[in-house]
Length: 143
Image (cartoon, rainbow, N blue to C red; front, side, top):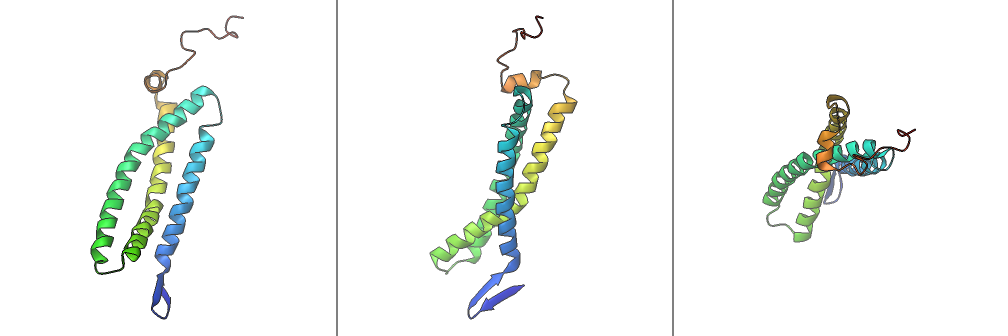
């Protein structure tokens, strides 16, 4: 649906996608901050590992989406004002966040659940983040 006054037209779908993308990205950043700053060392370590593992495919997906979208945008914007082309590129970036945000949430939560339930020990996590108390007895255990 297009609304316009005079020569300007605004696509409501793109505006909504941009807003949803920005909201999802901010929500993911807040989510990542909260889960990595609450709980004990082992709980936080699992969340950090899940965030790292979600980040790699997320970066690859982001690069593919953005590269293809930007090349299509720049290809269709030939002969336009350079500032208009830059605005289109930023519009595509913010719209792509609406596709990447849910992917990051699903992969992060799924990886955390896999680390929590499918692995019987934290040996796998010890390869990523060393346990500073490994090999030392807990003072409570000595009682």
